[in-house]
Image (cartoon, rainbow, N blue to C red; front, side, top):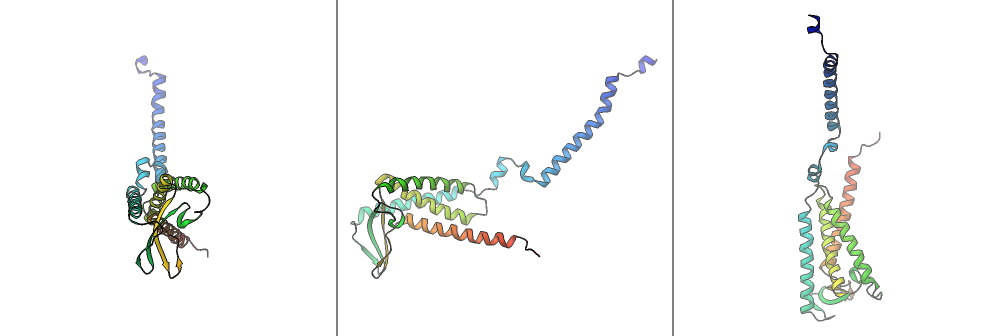
Length: 217
């Protein structure tokens, strides 16, 4: 009977469309796979991105240890030393208690008082920037992480003094005959060593980048 064999036009059109839809889906899947192959980072999620960063917790812990060592050594110096009375340990090394209202190594110590809040605000901004920078480092950037942790611990150590006392406690005195280096503390030493490590890391990183670039013919 012709009526029994007659097919629904809409059903026939749907059946014709199904192969085309399958081809389109296969093409879309192939395009996504090709994109992922060319740019794996485009398909990476947050945990994958995080796995490429350095573990910042040990470096924050190092900064905290330096901070505690700095504060403990200052408390010991204030409790045992008389102000400006040197205690000689070696021919070139004394313990001499001083109160520094300026920056590291007595810079701007006699500026009149405004430097207290200026250096405090500067230390807060620098410490926040370093903490964020440290969090965003890559896994292989541990020398830079070391330098940043040293600077961070020292900066916060002196910041606490400045906010709590209005000055920074210094007690380490290095000299040669009649020449005396400005009195400093553990925090100043950490900042100086950290800055040196950061500079060295930047120099060696620049050399590595230059060596890895293709040379012109």
